[in-house]
Image (cartoon, rainbow, N blue to C red; front, side):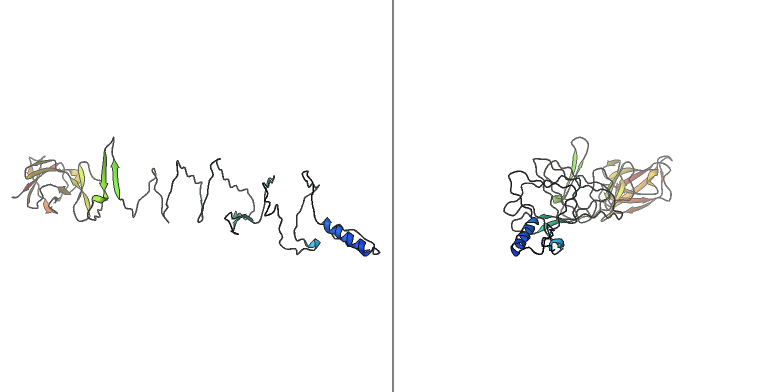
Length: 309
């Protein structure tokens, strides 16, 4: 006896004629194919699993590769419905819809979980009928939390290569930043603006490290530095009067509007019958003088400044 039918696996007598053998071989070849020619819906039902193995070596295949095709180029499927709790593939690729392109988008998932446990979800929610286009020219990575972008209309955002974005409520420190225009809004409808187009020279101003005292103002005392200065409280012609309070310490810079260094300066102790206090006077500029005392004023001292004409 001989087996001439590897698909149907029929046992045949050796005495069969050549014609009979050829017919059985043809039947066996057709048994390896499944052709459905009917107007009714074709169903494949099995009491156990169904395994599709193209290029199977059991029927003379190479045992490598293979393609399972649904539909054909001239007659694509209208829909491929898969009702399954899980769809698993070692390599899932999407064909490029660009005309003439043979490129594919390969989707790979790597959890980094060596224990091979857990379930991971990727959800894309699209609100119909508006379509959504997601275009990534590089990598997108989020770590440590979720990312939500809320847009009220079309928006475009250019991000720096490195750095931290400032927020309305966050306590971020700015460095290496420049402003083309600055507007400071006060209560009500009052605003103060600095227009960069009105600046004809470049300036670098360094703010003092400590906060000023009540009644002091910021003034430029050198090429770049800003200092807290006590504002003159009164002026009469070429004379000025100011107050040197104990809070100012033993050294104080006073700003004036006499626009001169030819000044006569006198410091009086109002608590000691206006006795004269010995101090050292430095004329830092035409609008700023510096007073130095060996002691801090125990009470308010009166400073008189008079222009020498």
